[in-house]
Length: 257
Ligand code: HXC
Image 1 (cartoon, rainbow, N blue to C red):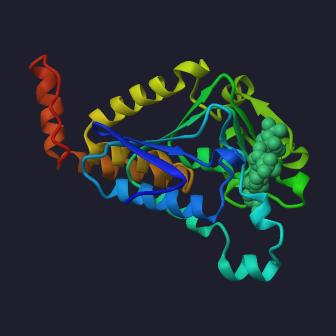
Image 2 (cartoon, rainbow, N blue to C red):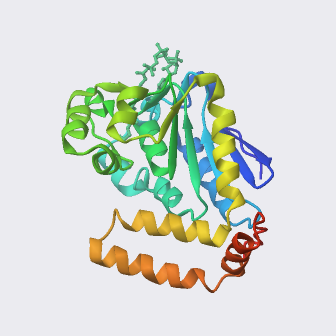
């Protein structure tokens, strides 16, 4: 499929999705939401895709949900359309995802980045949940995912004041895995994605599902869930290949089965 607000490129087993609504700093309107989710679901169905990278422009990953689109809506409009619920489908994508954030990742932009599995930040990145300044609160999971990522103290301050944090603060707080110089962000993101995509896809899916379960359940249940997936990995051809390759002192040739 072709999309207007998101550019889709394939680089081997890596798919690159670039938000492309430059006139509005990639503000997330209904069309962007529909297209990003459709593109991610399309890629998720493709066995040849091992990792999906989501990025924006140098100035803005995304400056939030589209304020102009939301401004005239009533409570009933929001409630009956279940505004933003489509974004939840991004969280159902089983292929590993990586957000490469440069510039503003505010409101819905921060929330979108947090929905991805790996979050890499350029040194120019700024994160925040400034919705309170607009008379609303986060609506795409920000109050929940930010709190789980950085803890109550910082999440509460950011959500109540609308203050943004730079890349260094975001890394120190545990929101991003690493900071890279802005001009190296894309190449580094693609390199990380290529590494992930080179692993066994079913096993990478298991690893992702296991880590994500930590946010949904108790420790004992999570460890039990992990153990079952670990056992299940022994049903894959890739487990046999990975371990044989180690013993034979050669790189593995995963077949993603
Ligand atoms: C609609 C937006 C937008 C947004 C920027 N634009 N952010 N349009 N929704 N979220 C538009 C501007 O109106 C402008 O278009 C153009 O993009 C460039 O933006 P400027 O403001 O001129 O750029 P700059 O001065 O560099 O400032 C950048 C910025 C600022 C600091 C990021 O744009 C800003 O504060 N944006 C809003 C950030 C925000 O509050 N995000 C949270 C949204 S609410 P025109 O045509 O006017 O020149 C949200 C909530 C989710 O995400 C859940 C709640 C229900």
